[in-house]
Length: 476
Image (cartoon, rainbow, N blue to C red; front, side, top):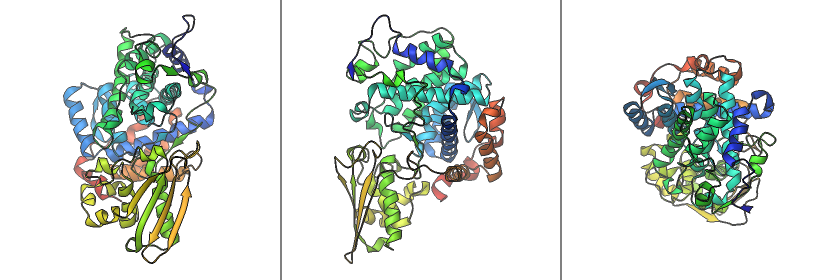
């Protein structure tokens, strides 16, 4: 780690990011990185489709229709098309409203829900190919994670929400690449986006959190569109004494993330966590353990006297609602997550319904759950691990530890499991199985399509609101 500052002879940090991302070609990307990028895209689109009937998504769509122009960019689950910033706003919000989108531990953030909506809406603006869209998404993702490495996780622990703060740069890079901008205008886009970077973890448990994801995607697109017509920003937006690193990261940075662009790919190293459950990733290890322990020891809800979840600091500071009163708060509650498993045997999108929260059985089960912070529990490969101990009324004790729940890079979901998640999410969003399967097949071959329009043709079925208005809380 070093104090901020750079030699006048060195390119500005944003310029270095722009030089790399604008020149990126799919030929330079390893096959395993391309494979993970397509998994990210498939997963996020599925989650967006599942979230289309969600009340917040509908409100954001109505807002965007009223305040942004119509245009070439699709909004998942809706028939109309909007200007690129408007579409990115809605798609970025819907991608995160269920908290079912992927997570990266490079910066502890949700990179895909800001980078992909920005890349997609910009690429649609230019009627780009599937190959170009894939390049834009990879460029935006890797820029996001390079900025995260500049700042390290201390930024997150200080209270900044890194999805928004770091994601602003990634969204701008993705949009600039989608528009086909050169290195000079891409650097301007990064500068324009960077001066707007913000995001507070105080948003957790409220509509503001998914809105910030959408807002970040839209900011990146707007910055790229403005840069395309010659609007400028500060070249040293990151390292200026009044810039991002000074004000948001205590004037400290480490440049290895930028130095390693193109040689170390953060999409695969450390990789991406794909979620099984629609809640904060901090709860996943404990939920998976609880499901396994209950099954292994034939324990029913009424048999349970106490569930003790020992967790590391990053989990404890994320799951802040012991007694949630809304679905948004429930996504950040260990007692809710475990109680849902005790009562229903699962933790699904339907578990987040308002009616589910009012179930008196859930309230009784939450009283049985205790989360304890254990500062030395985690290591680098298991940042959101857990140890769960279940005590029963008849004196039995069942306990186990899990470092990497299913979906983590070291314990990945198979393609079949990820594809099953996509198809279930599409069904919740009102997309029929034939159309969803056709879309999935095309996304798996994304780079072969000369037009993005051809990729998404199967899901141009209109809004799910009439046929599946409440499916996100009814379908299991």
